[in-house]
Length: 62
Ligand SMILES: [Zn+2]
Ligand SMILES: [Zn+2]
Image 1 (tube, protein in one colour):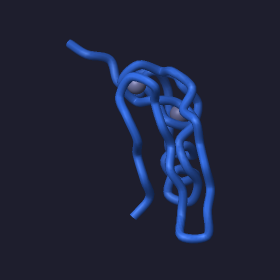
Image 2 (cartoon, helix red, strand yellow; image 1 turned 135 degrees about the vertical axis):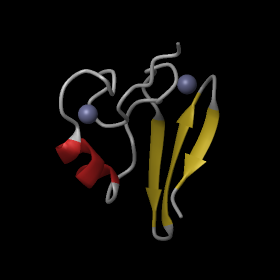
Image 3 (cartoon, protein in one colour; image 1 turned 180 degrees about the horizontal axis):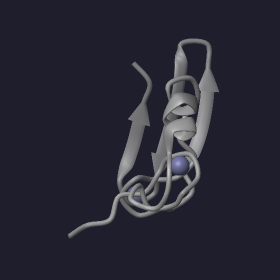
Image 4 (cartoon, helix red, strand yellow; image 1 turned 30 degrees about the vertical axis):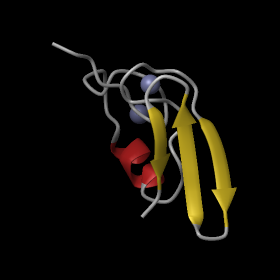
């Protein structure tokens, strides 16, 4: 089974309570890649944001 990491705190989503994280992630970009837990390169711009993992590519808002 593949572990999935929380985009905000970087812990496994099965580890503890991520309700606050989920709320925050509705408003702000993730800091960690959900698949490999690498730090994402985050850019915020007027239309939203983009977050890039060097392995898994780019996520964008909206
Ligand atoms: Zn979390
Ligand atoms: Zn990744």
